[in-house]
Image 1 (cartoon, helix red, strand yellow):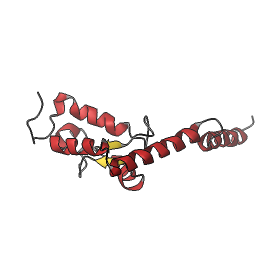
Image 2: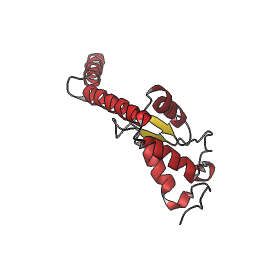
Image 3: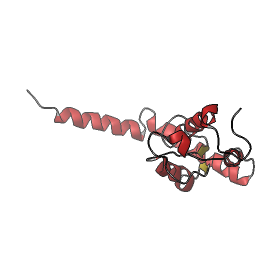
Image 4: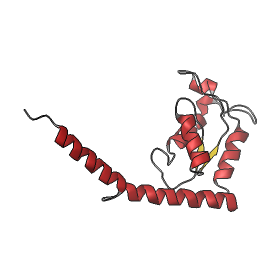
Length: 141
């Protein structure tokens, strides 16, 4: 039933997949703006996303992965212990001042994101302007 205490999380037991989902749900990119996150990057821009969530936006807690996984062998290359994951989840769920500050910051960013994509918000206006520009650039035949 998974890896032994202190061993790397076994790739076949579902926790690696769940951790990937957790990283993908980051309010940075998609699905759950307004919530603090634990980050577990594997390759490519995910390490930049982690820096954004943890250091810039201050809504994330890193699991502790330091090196990118080679393409095609992600599950074997990413090493995180149960303790790493437990520490990150405990920090995300922390009821103390640091956790409270992280949740408040995440909630504020979530409100801002929802306002931006709402009708009349900044993102909505930018998309409308882009479509208007593209319509003007359409060749007349």
